[in-house]
Image 1 (cartoon, rainbow, N blue to C red):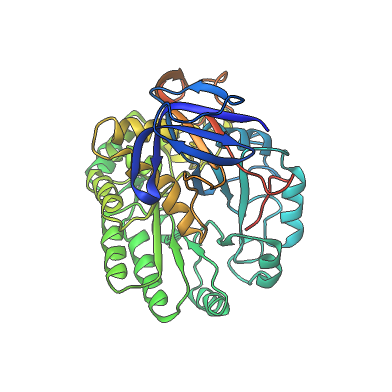
Image 2: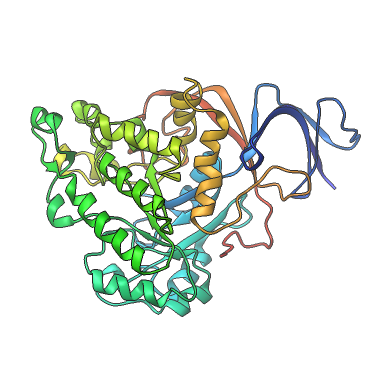
Length: 429
């Protein structure tokens, strides 16, 4: 039995608010012992000096895009899963917007067949709500449930409230999470920047705040009527944070997430016209950014999502207002968030890990990864001080659409562990 002894490592355990230096013994996909430094006796173990390193539960991605099948020039399943592992994720949750769409069991089986084997990673998927993501007709819900989807989401706005209500009523007896993006596409129009003074200065088309909040307000009224857990995706405005806070005060069964880039940028960031900051929804104004950060701190916003979305260099080499919306992030989110919030001492390391691991898993209705004796080893080893350059040689993703391409970052994942229950990495919950 191969054993690893990680010595003098900083152990983070968000579930019990634990943060300490310890030795950790791991063998055959299980945590055998966590003890004070120098107290574990394991003569056959491979010793590893982990002074200065962080050992913590694996990260959980709420939603990201898979470009295989359909758009393999942007990203393949091999590159996508490699990027997730390199970023410290042990659970990767895919949106259904592949080609063909994940709206039937055959699509899920096809995805499963193309996944690399023997990865330290669980790959799971949202099943579509509507056929071909057209927003007009339900999928066969029971068939997708039996196929093992984690929940239901089109990953794009739904404009038919009657259809959505009926879908929620259908799932009321067997509640699976439903992830919804509150957005009125007609109100967004061709907007690429949040309305405000910066939009006027930069001469970019505005995206109205009410394009998000008007739909969110109606959605929360629906949740009050139908007792089904709803996850609100891509929250990006201060007003939305206030609406969600009110909904939680009413004990409505809602959870919410914002993306990592909405925490790091705002409308002023767009002054460079870097097309990799062209996101959907657009980053908010400074007040929106601060409201999102504060909302995470107060528990109004539950989790940080990655929303990894790859595009080729040619697709992004256009004017800002014409650029496709989205950026890669699986390999970059942890080091950048650590430097912004933990190294600056605004957040504790436990707070960051809760928002990237514990809370996302709970939003999915799953048991969170943990770091306790006797538990499966679903872990990540992170060096918060290692400096590396973001370039074609270091990135696992095939695409390079990130504002940090060509820059040096501090903090890098060294290893992940995931205890497979079988030989196939696609382990539907």
